[in-house]
Each structure stands twice: as C-alpha cells, then as structure tokens.
Image 1 (tube, rainbow, N blue to C red):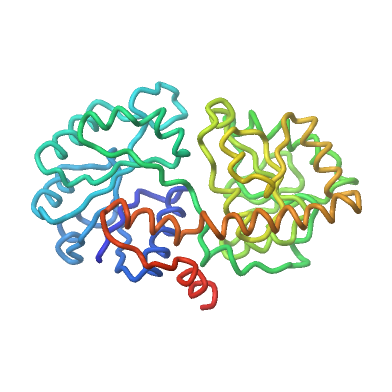
Image 2: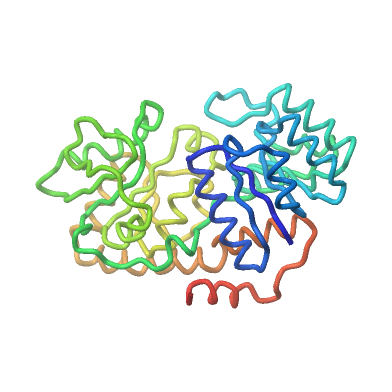
Length: 341
C-alpha cells in the first residue's frame, strides 16, 4: 500500500514519523514523507496518489480536506490532542479542529483512527469522547527506530559516566535542574557529556550538537543515560517519552525519574523517586563494582523488552492494523531483516 505521512517541522514527532516510515517500508509498503510547509497538498496527493494518509487534526487545511474528500478510497489516521485538557503543556484540540474533523468524518467516514503517543490507559482517559463522533482513539506510543539506534558501538571519545541528549529551557529545567545539576556540579566525581540543539548556559559539560548517527553510540558509551521527563508527565503518568526507547534499543543503561507509565519497562530500567534518590542511584551504578555489573544486566533486559514490543516495525504494524490491513505473520523475521541490512 502507498502511505503518505504529513510532517510539520523538526521536532520529536518528526523523528517518530521517520521511524514509522522506516517501519512501514520494512513491512513492504511505499511511503512518501511530506513536509507540509514546503509542498502544495494538491501536487503531493496527485503525484503520489496514496492509499492512506497520516496527518494531524491541527494541520487539516481546506486543501488537505478537499484532497481527502476527492479520494473516497483513502484511509486517514490523524494525531489529535486531548478532548478537554486545558494544561498549556498538553496538546489539546481546538474548536476549529473539532469542527473540521467532525465534519470530515461525518461526511466521509474516512478517518479510521485518531491517535496520541500516550499509554493505552492514558488514551482511554483523555480521548474516549472522540468515540461519540464516530472516531476510534488509539495509542501510538513512541518507539525505537531500528535503523537509527540498533547498531550502536562503544566510542572512547564518547565515554562518560553520564551521557544526556536534550534541550534545556525553563519548563524542562523544572525537572532537569534538581535531578541532574547536582551531579554536574561534582566535576571531579562524574565525567559527563551533555549534547543538545541549544546551549546549556553555565554547564561546562555541554558539548554542542551531536550528529544523529552518533546518538546511539553515546548511549552505548555512557555508564548511565538519564531519562528526565517534563513536569506534566510526572503529574499525569501516561506520557512515555521517546528517549527511553532509544536508550534501550542502543543497549544503554537508563536511570529515570518516576512516571507511572515507565513501569511498563519493568526491570529494564531503574526508576528514581526523588532527586536525592536519583543521585544515590547514579553513584551506585557508576562507582561500585556490584552496581556496574547489575547495570549491564538491567540494560540487557530493557533492550530485549523494546526489541520484542516497541520497535518502529511494531509501531508500523499497529498503524497497518488500524487501517484494516494485514501484517506479516512473523514480525520478528521482519525485524531480523532490518537489523541484518
């Protein structure tokens, strides 16, 4: 099948959409990745003539809606925000989006599912009201892109006690500063490497921007790869971020703050309840022989869990299933084919 994926810029969901594209191609589908700000909708739909379109309710323009309606065979899946949540840090659906989305579905029935990256329990809590408008809300959680994160290797130039990739601004700093900064201040005790697409002012361990293909090697070369969440994730519990999947796919060892949804990883990560607990946990796993040995085993458990459940091939198979199409009987065989390329 031919699947058109609409994208709206370079951000976390860009990388997830690229991972879906890679997974869908591995499953035997044709994929076109459309930067919506750069190309006209009519040209893109005409040139590719997709069987399905993956987009976002907040990016439905009159042109896109017309392209959908002109193709009655087209199946549509859309990312949508929470139905009622007024938290400014949570994606919520606006009045115009509701009007356009509900009219599209009422007149065509072509929207086969709406989705968000929350856990299934979170989707049931935040998106169930879409059902009364004939829309099926589903969970499309973040995942590990095998093509980007599986073939990691130790790199002595990236060797460190603490390896972290991410931005730092006021909202994220509410968690990052109390958890990570006390350790960064202990320069003689911990060797840290911090990368991000914007400077971490005042942090001497900030190393600049890291190339995408090197991120997996940082995770494989750091003794601890922290996962630190945004405040709303700690509060609500169902927003499982992308970083954990990437760390574990690259066989990194992850210590995370506590978000209810992270319990899905079981013994494959270590969860710290408080900043003090985080500091003590990092010290144990980086500075004691017993802790270092345990970290290797924990990382292996986490890696195996992601490889069995949460690669981009698994997520692509979810998308295919939600569109009502069939998947190969043996996804493990598809995954082996990807990692052996």
